[in-house]
Length: 467
Image (cartoon, rainbow, N blue to C red; front, side, top):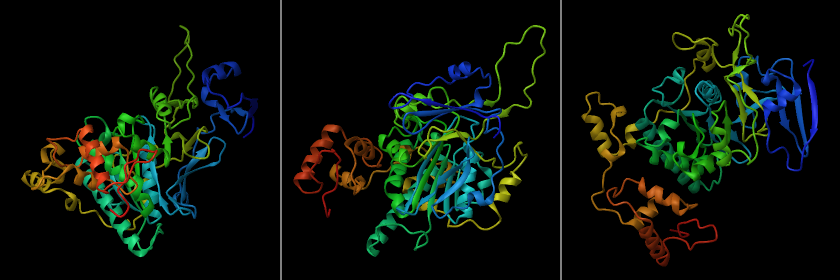
């Protein structure tokens, strides 16, 4: 681009830890903050570029070829400020792993359009998708009929997640019998994704299925990825408390694909404290309106019209990509103006062919009391199931604490805190929750009996070999 001014700066060892974008723009005498791009390079260098207009102001529309998964398992969803392609990985052919991904941003930042792009890419690339649109189906309405399973309530989302975990467990047993340690697309199973839009509704404090949802998502992230069952969530907040309150869940997501769209003022501190950004790092803010300059209007001056101002929807940082500190933007997905019905541009991108995969039989994963509660409702639909406390059922013969531990303990083990959470959410003996002292006494007895392994330096609780 012509008329771009570039400055290469020498930085202290370890790079710039505190960065004030407004102060930098004032120093450079640039009123439009979005025209100044700061990027920290390798070693002790940083680059400051001043553009005549924001380089991300005008993005092209997404094309079908962008959303076809390449040989490295990636799709192209947009571009960085310097024109380099912004890629999102759906599959890692080197390891045979499906991905776990999280998309964060405030309302209107472009989460749902990005989810649409991923859904379209999955259909075009032969990837099976089971979708929960928890805004009553409004976030991505065009996905109706374009995915194998589409649900719109929290209870249905739980049934869908149970089905995905069951499929992952089936594949693990099948692959073990075949002597396979990895996943290969189509041999014999397709790549599958569970995608949850507005996941904060399912995982926030007070949500009726929060504990079980966190456990199921963790299980998919830990074991599903190695058998071709991935998980993607899109949420309005990035704080631990808004993601099921689980350290394990956050750690799992940090190792996948994490995208941050426009954020609230408090979200940045939360992302840093939760480890999604290096401590001391600061991202250049994403403005709500690109190119808007705040000026004091004198009494004799007419008000300036803002009709031509451009919203920053789709501007983001790919925090786990190769350039986490570089601003990027998604391609335009769908019509720019709101449509009175389904967006014809998005429907054209999906195409008219049948989506891959079979719908999950949700009722196959409902408990007896959940099915009874559903049947008693006049509509007879699963969407009206009561809260877990109302439908939780005790087995005819109460399980011992040791049996419950063995039922929820995965082969790779888990921490004591996660084990406590799993026991609280397993549906047994809800009136008598397991206390920490009881848990530790039971674990000690189980080690003596050879049911679980002796602890090592990590403190992870694991089943005994061969158990």
